[in-house]
Image (cartoon, rainbow, N blue to C red; front, side, top):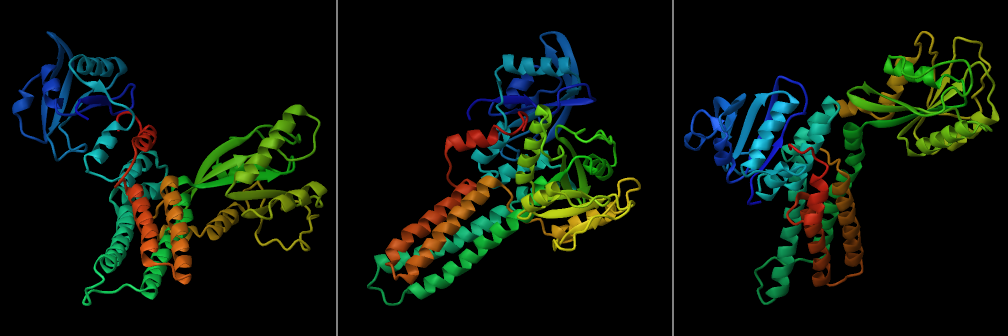
Length: 451
């Protein structure tokens, strides 16, 4: 943390502008060594200065340099940003000069890591930075912005505040039993407070699935027998000819993927190989992949042929998907109806044909209905969506349930207090009140270098 780091903060390639970011105690003095213009060590904070980056007497580039002095910066350290002309050679040359003059190349996410370690943001906000960079829809962006503003952190801090109040009262009772004018915590009092905390934790966990849909989208598998129109359906949903379509069964032997937005929620659609018994080795591999994708999908679109009677393979697929969120899509409804589903009692059935897009709108409406996407449209986007964070929340809930059992068994308060402290500490791990270096290294390694 005592050294000065630098990195290219924009995508490396041909463009109008590249930005090189420098942070640390010596950021301004190091940049000043290679800058021809005003003396950067004498300028005011949060100002921009025109000049040149020079290598001894040679002009490397014409630049604008932004000076931001500690503590009002992203990292809480002195930060300098060099805006140079876009281009691989120019940008790399400026970076090289910084390294020669005392900077160290930043590790992935190190600027955000310093922002966290210097107390500008907590760990949840740091993870929201990564989510903001990788967001692929407007809703995901809004979700990440709320995380960056600390809305998720506020939920956790409020829970920790509730817990520390309970713990403090219990400790006063234990340490000063002789005082009669202090509030005495009883098991009934504790049970009421624990019930409230359990309710808040359950709410966070319940809303996690909605938040996960906003952040990651809906993993959607199109499955069915060969030649029922899976690839055609993918093309219609994507509104492009992405998958090869023929009337030859088994044309699709490997997965084909695409993305589409419905109500601002991303559908990650996978067109799978037709599932059937086959002696073709390549097709067998495709069928196995299809079954793996089926097991992992959030939504299954099971295609049946309106112009054919139900086959044993169809019935087997219906059975395989009965525990999944499934929409049965009956294709080729422009042809004679030979398909009878009346005895199967299927709840979500949509009739379409992929020739003129009939039914595609109905299919999208059914997806909106099943996943309650209209509710998500009106959501406050105050969800916890990070896997690490929700795992800790579930760990806390399990301990709370153990405390509830302890209250029912009339366990001593001082024993229950130990578990309450554990919950408080685990919640602290979520926001980074305590942490280990290995966790930080793993978390920030997923960031891009310039962030």
